[in-house]
Image (cartoon, rainbow, N blue to C red):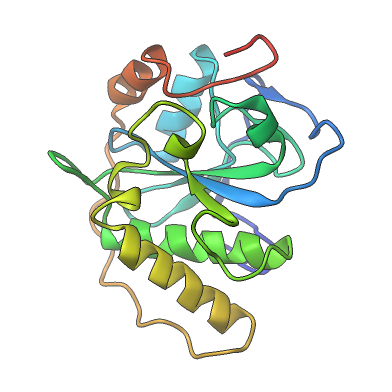
Length: 207
C-alpha cells in the first residue's frame, strides 16, 4: 500500500462494470475475505471481472502488492449476498499453491495489514472473526476463502490484530515478512471457473 492510513493502494485499476455505484444508503461494518482459487495478478482479476458478473474492492497479489478495483464508496459484487455487499469491503488474495490452497507469507501479511487498516479507517474496532471480519463462505455456499479460514486462519487473524494494535498505538509492528516471492502469474481460467460455479457475484441482476 502507498498509505495504510488512508487506504491508498499500490495500484488503482478501477472497474467500469459489474459493481453498483454507492452503497444503497448503508454503512461499512465488516470486511469479507476471499481467495482467488488461482494465482492472479491485479490485472488478472480486472480482466476476468470485465466479462463475469463479479468484483471485489481489493486484490492482494502473491508478492504482496495491493490493487484497488472498486472504490470503497461503491458496492462490489463479491459475497453472493447483496445486503452483505452493501455493508462490506471485499478483499481477494492470490493463492501460491493449489493442492491445498495456500497464500504466500507476503500475501498473508499484507492482506492482514489491509484488514487492520480497513477496521481502523472505518472505526470497526479490533479485527475479530465473526464480528467485523468474515469469510465468503459465511454468506454463500462456497469453500472460499479456503486456507484463510482453515490452515492459515490463526496466523492471518493474529497478524491482523497485531497490525491493528500497532496502527492504533498499542504495540510495536509485527515482525517483517520474508523477501517477496516472484510476481504472480495470472491464472484467469481458475477464477473464471469459480465465477461460473457461482462462487462470486450478486449484482442488481441477482448474480
